[in-house]
Image (cartoon, rainbow, N blue to C red; front, side, top):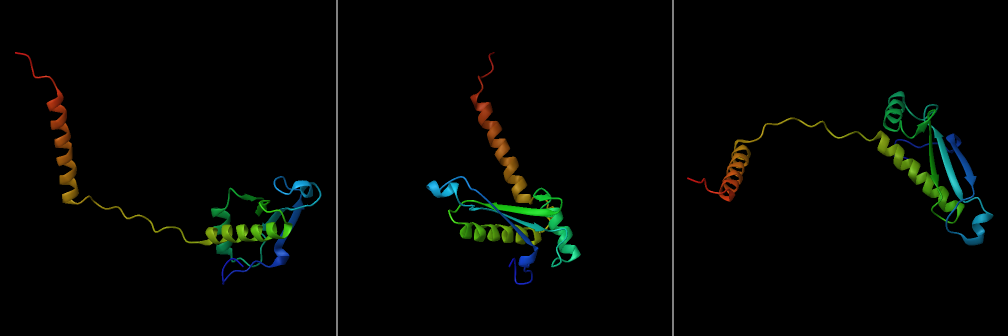
Length: 137
C-alpha cells in the first residue's frame, strides 16, 4: 500500500531472489536472502494516465524500460528483506507522486535590508582604509 488511495496489487510485483553478500556467516552461502522487487510503472493498471506520466518523469533515472526495480539485502532473512523492499518501493512511489514545492515568488529587497547592506559595505570600506599606510608628503 503506497497511500490510502493507491495500492499496488501483488500480481503486478515481480520478485527475484539471489545470494546476498554481507552478514549471515556460513548461512549466506546457501540461502537466497537478497531480494529484487520490480514493478512495471508503464504497464500498471492501477495508475491513472496522469499518475503514470508524473511517476515516469520523477523516477526517470530509476526506470529501465518503464520498470522500477528496488533491491534489499540489508537483513539476514529473506522475509525481512521482502518487507524492506516493499517499504522502499512504497516510499519511492509516494515521493514520486507527491506534489512539488510551490514555485518561488520573486520579491524586492526591503528598504531597511538595502540600507543595512550598504551601511555594512561602508563600514567594511572604512576598516580597510584605516589599515592603509598614510600618504607620504
